[in-house]
Length: 185
Image (cartoon, rainbow, N blue to C red; front, side):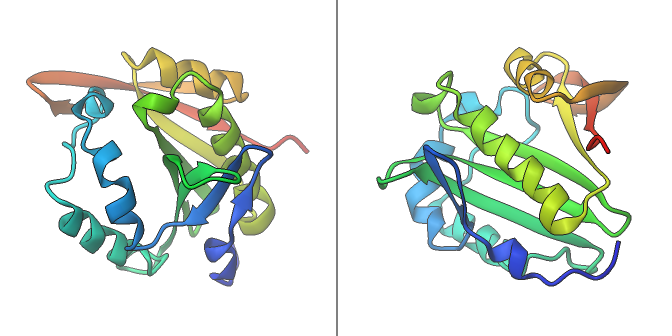
């Protein structure tokens, strides 16, 4: 992958229902209440943020749009309803120097099961191919997370591996599936 210009990492994306804004520290105050919902972390090793201030510090680091060693581009968007101020979630992606990209997302509880996850993740997936020349996009999903599995399969991702004991959190081993979406030529 050639050294990309970071301006695409700061691009606002949109769909018919959503606006994806590049994540900034100022979003911490807006997103904190939704991200404090412990149920969102059932299949994740981390916990809700401790405070809006700690979340703002994290988002400030992410504003660099680069990993600390400079080898990966970090892409993060706060997602709100088009024509409104309500935030429904966020999407994050990273693009490695070899062109491999990773995709992850959160949809806040009041907005789940309304198609927002497919809409925002599809937009970002396609953007990774067009703006960053990603060679493929991967997602790692806890094998118990049926909603996320259904989401990536609906988007055309293919399961390529089972990773037994990929993590240990909340007093249990977590197996993961690795899914990949390769753009057809």
